[in-house]
Length: 531
Image (cartoon, rainbow, N blue to C red; front, side, top):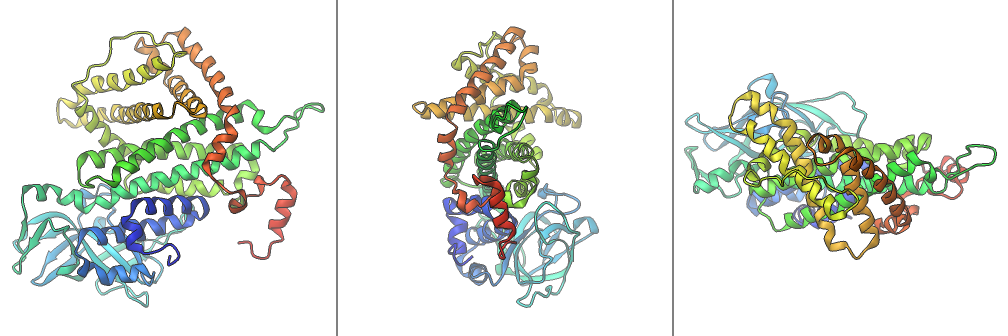
């Protein structure tokens, strides 16, 4: 960690933070859970939500890695819906006492199982001196001391092994864990006097209290989305490079390359287009985040939308790369299999994708309610401008169809709108991402990416368009033909796109990247330093 630089600097300089996540995801996937807790959640919260004097002792230990940073939010009962957590922090005269009121309030999953020093940011409901619940706040605590022993009032039970990524997941309960008043991460939004009375600075501060407490989750969601995009790019680089070298004997006379097999080529090139466009989209969201208020609703929603749009596609891409590589895709030496674990972990980390997508979709449906969809017309999938109009029509039609379930707070309607909210979140991001490519129209490889992405989108949702009279069967057939043509065009730009990813085959070290596969495996098998 010393080689990476100051923990505080990395945690608060978003381009550096995203770069650390991206390269760890590509080259050292097992580090992702560690750096997520250490740099983003713990160090980021301490660096931004309290004063320098209070944070300094903790950040000092995190900076030289004499302690590992972790955040404790999720519980058995509420999962990642942390507004409903039950852990309490009660004022006791000069500080707080943290307790687990019942078994379902135990913190579930945080990585504190291995006995090494831990600096933890703990989410709990602040109960003031009058016994009033003041909502969720964050508190800093050393759950394990320098020798790795659990702090008084803390019980840590390591969970069973899970195969996706290496983590020392645990169940944590509190029975009178005492923390100082200075351990409260208030973000200067409120004060607590010596009598334990909490006073918000103003009404705006009160409304920002919970968003402030979870502000680093917003950063974490985007960092994990960014690193999954990096994993997808690496998986495609490895799989497509291998496919371009691997001969496939079909008959005694015919031995095409694997890249020429339609189910390999079409799948991986379509995934390539989706990954490139999500990289551009993700970069735009990252740029906007750098100058945004992390407690502002629009900022939070933009990241909640990006997470499922990027992460679910990354998992699909990595899965396809792993399968198309056949037996070679099974081995960690070829990297792609290890990317699956970090994809699964990220998709359910920092808030489950479907939960975030449905909440963000509901917000969008209300925000866009005043925009009526265009009159139903048949779109021409062979026309690039018409394809963009078709994506816009899908977005606004879903908005209109969702309104009947947004009119009442009834549980039945709240449940019924979830599929529409998820569809809207995906449709909105696809339309926004496609629009970002206008600035790259001078690059023929990006135009090829645009065409494959848009045509694949129409093809995937052909049934939706057909049932609403926006495509007819003839147009659906044209979509498939145009998609095949666009994939052919994209194939011609494959070297340029892979080169733009900037991966070094020697650093990746995957045997399948070698021109001599048997020799590459021999070298690895006989390498005395291999893991």
